[in-house]
Length: 147
Image 1: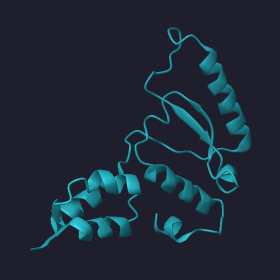
Image 2 (image 1 turned 90 degrees about the vertical axis):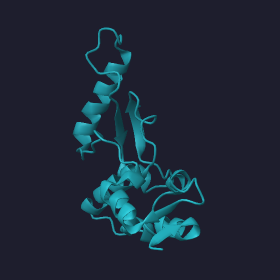
Image 3 (image 1 turned 120 degrees about the vertical axis):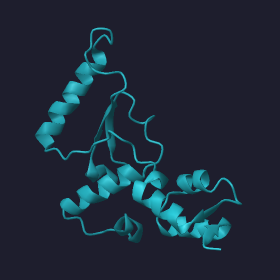
Image 4 (image 1 turned 180 degrees about the vertical axis):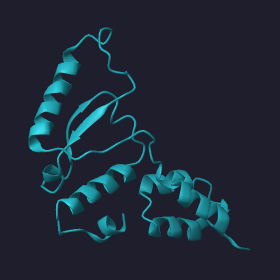
């Protein structure tokens, strides 16, 4: 029929490293069938991964991170009515060392609506793996390499 559905579609999406949450939301309808063109469109647009528009990642030195964290704490003590910071804008400070340690999470500090905004973690995972590669890390798992 030229379409994938049910278990075949689920296995394809799993092979593409779509996180479990994404599999559940994408394959809600067990009878849903996708044509090859629909699959191509979903992959090209990255709709499957729920990429968040306007979300950016930047690598900082230790000194820059210290200053940014200080600014985040100053912003949190300000009166929101007097602050010029947009209420829909958030910042998260992350550390790869924490991710690679027993903590298994890179999050250090947040300001604003950061955690509420991310539906799936694929965008974060891909940025973390990119920064790990840039940092000359060598112990990548097979899923990390596929991202």
